[in-house]
Length: 222
Image (tube, rainbow, N blue to C red):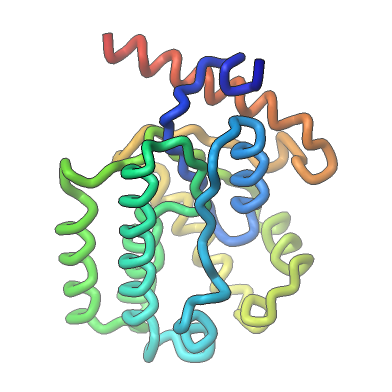
């Protein structure tokens, strides 16, 4: 019996991993997919034509980047649903509007007209009964200093050149965002409570918590 069967997790579930840069979304995505025998849905950073340009000039490229992300994530969400579920997804579609676009509008690196165009498009595409929302959003959280260390360790060039104040801003905004998020159910995990790189077997504890979540939500739906 695999862990998905052991803890009663539906084989058609779609689980999305959310959290600020550096919390270990990709590691969690792969570990859970392996444990549950699910497929993965990873953010394709290397093929993004705007990302490097964006880090060089936020004001010029923020709108282009957000539209690109919206289109790509919408297509991926549709693909997972049409496939019949059974996915763990690295990063949610909700973070783009709730955190990134909003931050750039408030800081003046996205003009108000572009922001209104983007948010209207997001609302029309995503915040409707027809959009296949995930069954569960797993939110990874932890202290800022630990997250900054992880960003330094993985050494992505564009992230190394980004001011620490930007990561501080994102960390604070993620905390605010998750506390008001209600598009789908949430399971919060503290990144200090596990280390999947050093102790891969700890994934079972996380799967057990996911199983309890699905058990409780099934009871509430009765």
